Amino acid sequence: MPGCVLRAGSESFDVEAFLAVSSWEPSAVYRRGESRKPNRISAHSGFNLVVSDHDRIAQQIPDVLLFLAAHESEIRRLVESVGPENVVLDFGTGFRDTAAQSELLTATLVRAAGSANVALEISIYLIDDPRNESRGNADAIRRRG
Picture (cartoon, rainbow, N blue to C red):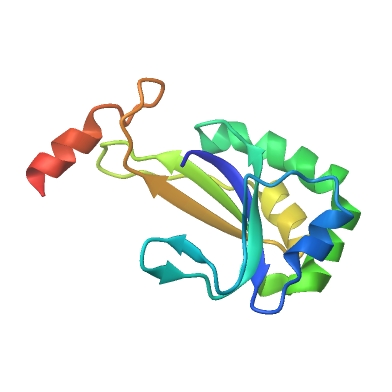
């Protein structure tokens, strides 16, 4: 959903041991072999941590930059635990019914995330939310589909 979430996990990640000595309070914790969704077993252990709850990516970026700076050593410990390919900042935003939807990830953000060995991802959601420009678009797209 909209907002920026730090996702981390791997097949061999000991999520409990990592979180036991962390100040982070994840929004979700999952373990290898457990059911995450109906008919789907998790292939790895990990967690999701909300970094920003803003709807727009432009509003999420300052929160993320503060997070990266404030938690540099904890992020380094996380990357060492799961590997750089398994730590992602996922920027979520709502779908806007326009000819083209573009989202800018600033050079400052890309540098900071790269320096921390954290990947960046953008997820665009079809949502009905009165606070978001995508309001009502979900129904219109469902009718078209």
